[in-house]
Image (cartoon, rainbow, N blue to C red; front, top):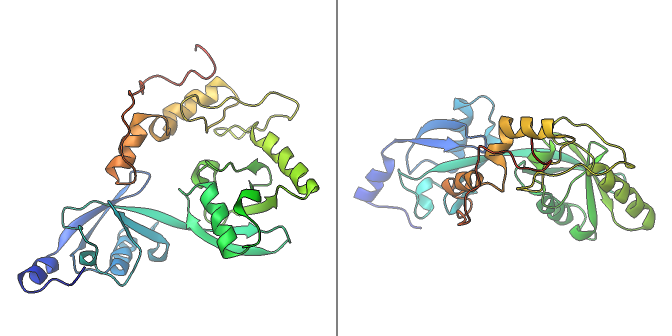
Length: 264
């Protein structure tokens, strides 16, 4: 998109307040103009919110990833003073590879494990296909492909161990971790025994596991009722942020806890 000239250039220089939200529904307001560079907008966000770092921010507007710090907002077609903005926080993870070496991986906590495996393959291990990788966090929890990193407690500085499904000894070890992961409560962290049945999952999203109904109820009331991907409320939040299109199925009753364990 070319630079505006004349009257259009003057309009682009007029300041306005941009409200930027993150995945935790926190909002940060900063004064910018359409001539403000993306990198400068990140620095102003970091100055307005001490928990943010300019070099750890990814900015989005519906239909756009603002991925070039040297571009202005006006350089992205369709962005106006009325546009909405959202941000994701970049985290740096330590990945231990199968040969015992380590390297830093930069991603965001909302990314899926599948995306992380692909990033490892591109960044450090092109000869190891992502489909053959098994990622382990905290020495116990095996990360499934559809897990998001934040859901499993992966944060800045976390260590991920990268195993492979072959040779056989690695496959055997990975199978043991898989069994342990199915017996790990996502709310209280209780670890069940391999000899015992697997922990039930949330009946709506099939991602969160619980050791009993008390943990499921507590997690639902604390946060999962808003973040459960099986609810229309979660899809609406994503749609408002411009990430996904809102689906059509009938809305579940958000006042009811998913009946994974039977009647209360």
